[in-house]
Amino acid sequence: MSLASAAAVFQNLDPERYDAIPIRINKDGRWVLPSAAPRLTSAAEVIRALTSGGSDATSEERDAQLVPRPGGTAGERGERNGLVAGVGLDVVFPALHGPYGEDGSVQGLLELANVPYVGAGVLASAVGMDKAAMKVALNQRNNAPSALLL
Image (cartoon, rainbow, N blue to C red; front, side):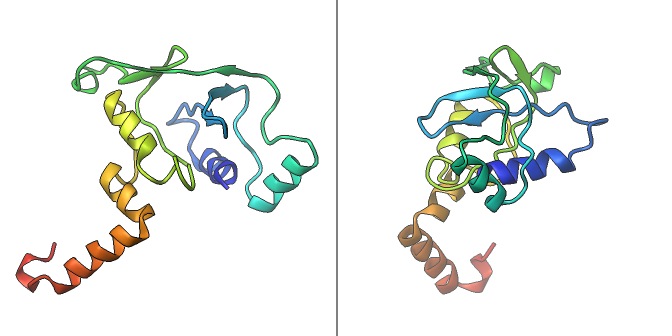
């Protein structure tokens, strides 16, 4: 689950080096800033919390909106690249799973907003989620002359 993945990321980031900010995208597509980072690190714990009426995050949260910075050179000038609810972002670490998480949608949105992110890009994510397209891509790679393989 995305919440368990995010919790693992937060627990393993060095707080002396990184000021991590949790941003959650709800099932309805609403972006929120929870008051605390997710803490349950297994999918079973998250499912138990959600089915018992609890939550992995506190109930305090505020709506978030991605506000892009114009141009692609903000990072080169030492400025933050984008804002979410007024909070500057240096880089996003997407810990998302499934449609709208791994399919390149969020990566595309971040690219449009000039916000750098870690992980696979839009095309690799989209092809990776589309099993038929991935099969075609792998077959093309496997049938290519060895001099052209990257």
